[in-house]
Length: 260
Ligand SMILES: [Fe+2]
Image (cartoon, rainbow, N blue to C red; front, side, top):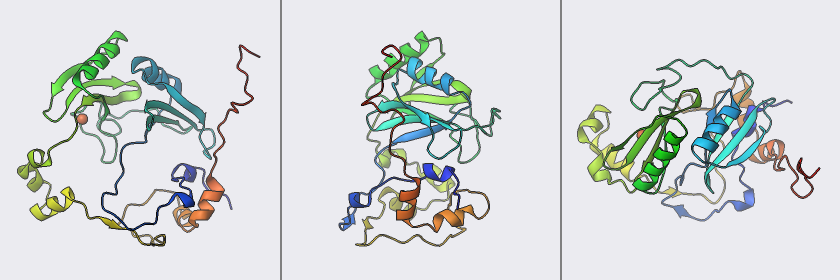
């Protein structure tokens, strides 16, 4: 059976022996953004902007695993945090402001789409240094603006990206959750308290089985019956069939052009 190439990228490649099956994990939650993947129709233009204008080193550029004719690129924000790009051969190149793209941090866009993304700097001096770097490359920058909990500058990237660079950490939720806005969102006082203190997770000693598809819950989007096919595979089968761990270049034998 041929499985869709797109499945591969959705997989978290966790080795079974890396799974810790010990007891309660009260603070279990994702600890950061490993990579934010942005769609592109022009990989070179995106890499030039992120590497030259923003100064992020290029770390990977390769055929996307299992996705025919798609290219994947990674630039580094930190050793465990990257911005990635996916150049799929069928990517549309049209921008519909207010639907596919917001264009700035104050405009509408379709639910689930990226409104804007804020990159992190440790302090305001770093934010201002980035403002100078970006302007030095001829790109207009708005700010800084002081939001109290973060200080930010705003600018655009290729293909209509709406970007921000901020400093700030340790938000005081007691000060920054507005009761008026909470009410407007239909969130009760009890519900907001639960949101502020998510329940600890009591991990069982054996792996949790794949639940049946529940139309009330979010699910990945695949055409036809493909979702059922991939979600009915065992975790071991998925790991075996879709994993590709070899980098595209064998650095133990590779000779660059200058040395060839
Ligand atoms: Fe923001």
